[in-house]
Length: 158
Image (cartoon, rainbow, N blue to C red; front, top):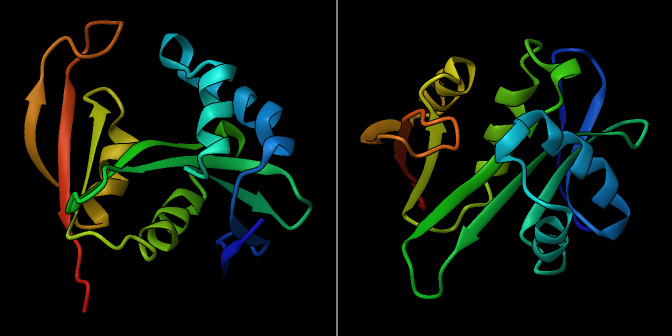
């Protein structure tokens, strides 16, 4: 496992962002269940782990409290934040904001793009604070027929 960064969260516990390994699979599956019908299957998550595309947010006790999937096509100038989740027990503590900020520091493309449900106002607020702007809407994108808001951020690579 590679430690990407260590930060001090607003709850005064140390947190680390690491590349997930198969030992994290069950914990990430449990997190994904918070997405309901939109949750990734265990098989898909295993694939992302084996491809080193899945990061986990781990507290100082080794508990997985969040995860993210970052994807980039070969020769593309855009990274896609394909999934970003913080365990419900840790929300509203500023952890998501800290996690996202540190996670995005390692992005080496000109742009970062994501889709988020119009109903997920907390996530939209976090993304906006991190400099993402709304660039499009995709009606009926999710299984519940809600609209996806497409957001994009330009990365300062200097």
